[in-house]
Image (cartoon, rainbow, N blue to C red; front, side, top):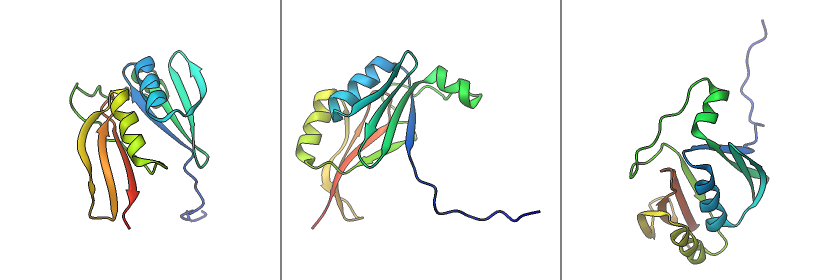
Length: 136
């Protein structure tokens, strides 16, 4: 039997969020960030992000087809257990775009203990979206 070894070469390429209303979620991320959309099918959408990363949005019930279990619906006003943390080129503009897209403000732009200045928002499905820049 060959022992299992840890591998440090796994590269994150895709983050997929389960969403309740796909057109609403696509509209939110398109307006907030303006990324190129790579995939547009009735139950799934995917955006190209910088650094060879992609963000997928999957209708919650369709998400369950692949996993064998449908994720719970996040009640309105509550938060999902996911956080997307971004370093935009223009932090002020990113905050304005998030607000215009309808993001729910969670915590205003302020210095954080880990050395960033960050503002916290929630997308329409309760996923936390953070825009930040390093202090100093």
